[in-house]
Image 1 (cartoon, rainbow, N blue to C red):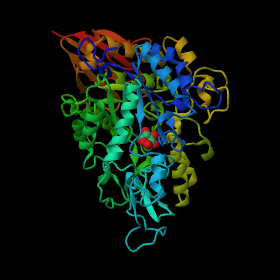
Image 2 (tube, rainbow, N blue to C red; image 1 turned 120 degrees about the horizontal axis):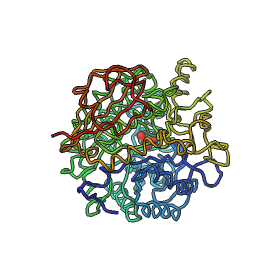
Image 3 (cartoon, protein in one colour; image 1 turned 60 degrees about the vertical axis):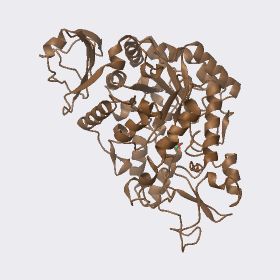
Image 4 (cartoon, rainbow, N blue to C red; image 1 turned 30 degrees about the vertical axis):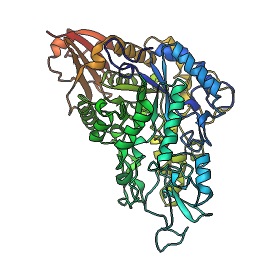
Amino acid sequence: MTATNDRGEPWWKTAVIYQVYVRSFADSDGDGIGDLDGLRGRLDYLQRLGVGAIWLTPVQRSPQDDYGYDVSDYQDIDPLFGTLAGFDALVADLHDRGMRLIMDLVVNHTSDEHPWFVESRSSIASPKRDWYWWRPPRPGRHAGEPGAEPNNWGSVFSGSAWELDAASGEYYLHLFSRKQPDLNWEHPAVRRAVHAMMRWWLDRGVDGFRMDCINMISKDPALPDGPDGGRRGAFGDFGPHVIGGPRLHELVREMHAEVFEGRDGILALGETPGVTLDEARLLTDPARDELDMVFQFEHVELDHGAGKWDPRPIHLADLKASMGRWQAGLADAGWNSLYWGNHDQPRAVSRFGDDGIHRERSAKVLAAIQLLLRGTPFIFQGEELGMTNAPFAQVADFRDVEALNHYATATAAGEDPGVVLAALRRVGRDNARTPMHWDTTPNAGFTTGEPWIAVNPNHLGINAAAALADPDSVFHWYRRLIALRREEPAVVGGDVTLLLPHDERVVAFTRTLGTVELLVLASWSADVAAPPIPDAGGWAAAELLLSSCPRPADHDGPLDLHAWETRVYRRRVP
Ligand code: GLC
């Protein structure tokens, strides 16, 4: 495998990356939890789809409090998922197929069961004490009393971001669950340990890292109170003192020099909640030797009201404005990632599309936009089947620490349990984490055992076996779009022009490279639409590369669209 293609572009600009949430992908041993051997058994499917790389959610040893995002040993595979030998075999199988593997790298925090934290917690005098953020109670307060936490920060997973350690009378910082203490990146030994661990994985053959919450590693060491309210409810917002913190660029550049320098074709991808466009430009400008791309969050926060658990309708014009800003903002320097969903978001077709009668067509709309904009697309497992949110009936059906903590905290604070449950059903992360639908056998072919979270009953109609057999399926639509990205240089390198920015029913954009021009035209509604595309007549005469409706719309205009219809045209311009 070469690091660049024949146009000199790095592999990750042309490849489509597929995210495997290992726990829910394929279970080889009947324990109800997906594993590496299960994944190895499904590589033909991924190769058929045409993806160039897999991003594997964390498989290192972990107590699984946040399903692997709480690592207790960075250099071993959790027995739930397999062994290091099995991991090596997976990497070899992928490489044999010309595919690559990206690891999740969770180093903003460890598990509280990681030996580093166990040592750090053992005594105030421990040499590893400062590997984490320990602080005494607020002056004048006694440890454990309400308000004695060292500052007012709220945790992403509800409650205070501080946990009291009764033995020492000090608190430790955890921006996520109390079992995910934050590492102190100010400490050089922490950085050295992380860099060494990263090199160890690269030496094993992995092709890059998706760096969890990487823009949160540099905290203002004074740990000042944050602004009240907002998304953290009764607590203060840590954001201003943590996100894009004072030494972020320095730390990321140091990582680049220590880990990536001199290695070819390694992808450094940052997950960066709350990142601004300016910050993303700095982080991904190749001249700065920081990251190759970031996951920004703007488009997946458009439906937030007073925070994530207060979902609002999404206005298409807002979505297009965001898309346009990021496409333009990273056009000359830097590079975009393109995603609709992942293991932290509800299912894309349920959130952005219509998961009722227009499920397949709206899934195809999302696919065409994502795969034909400029950037590297990330498909989350099951998106290529148009998998939907799950019909969770009660709180006991949920598994995610974020959802369960929120339910407990919100209902204890007097919120209506029915309303809280409705929000969990709509935006909870478990929607994306129900098992992959392989076929119509029990548990959708995911496991022969009892699945760790219920399989969505709609797998009888929505599954890989059925999709592979149907040439018009969402799967084959994705496959054709992925092939088009490979074959048509304008998709990777072309300029992007968004059309009809204020239209609430149609998404339209062109891609232009040299003499080739593509038009992507998609209906974003259940109505018929007549988009006023400039030069509609010219486009109607162009080559129709892809169309999600069997016959052209039987209306007046040549570019009129059916409900949730997608078309892709290509023409040569003089
Ligand atoms: C990232 C992960 C998410 C996890 C959190 C804490 O946002 O994607 O799943 O809960 O970081 O590690």
